[in-house]
Image 1 (cartoon, rainbow, N blue to C red):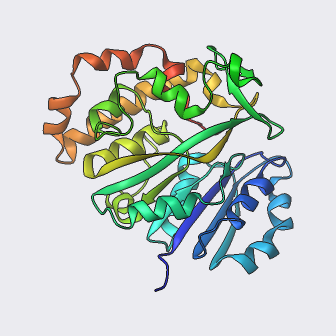
Image 2 (image 1 turned 120 degrees about the horizontal axis):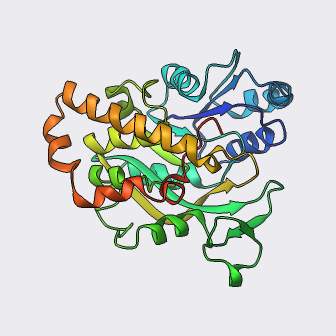
Length: 298
């Protein structure tokens, strides 16, 4: 039986030191039927040259390989270009400085392909530094290299401890109201493309793109966390999540746009039923701890 086609989308912006490693992690996937779309969003460094260096290997490995070099338009427009071009039944989006474990697509596909009520599946995220070395976090999300002295041994460990009352292995994971309280979905998720097509991808009016994506999926389908490390999340000096002022601004705008979306697209009952729960006050506190997973133009 022929495997379902999975489209992997890599948006690239100024990651000349990392993008080859990211692409190689997709080349090395155990899952065979993969389409790769790499989009350089007007990088000012040598990222595009790095993509060209590995293009021949991509042509040989993937069912289809597309390399787009365009002017800088931002992460949302870049991702939407990839989604429109994608031919796969499932989508996998990875930042151009992160790494997918070799079995990531296989494990995530095995779940989604037999669970049609789910629109997203995701595994755990280990942490690595700018050199690719395994690391951990202290209480301030600063890097430490000793697991014994770490407060958080992985990114999903951080997310789970930030939401101690939320059981990640239960049906409460990824519900609409729980995502409104704070986006707790790790990186490296596989998406059902038909679900994404239903809301036509990302919205330029909602700049916190991952939060917007999760809320749209949660209105339509369930989300699943698999307790298995399938992704390496790079933590370095340029992670834009460290700009908490910017994150606060785009969070506010994204939530307002979500309200407007619900009221104008037939989801008003969901908004009024769930958006005023007492726990949502948490949304406006500890922005760094809640939305550290978001990489706005990372």
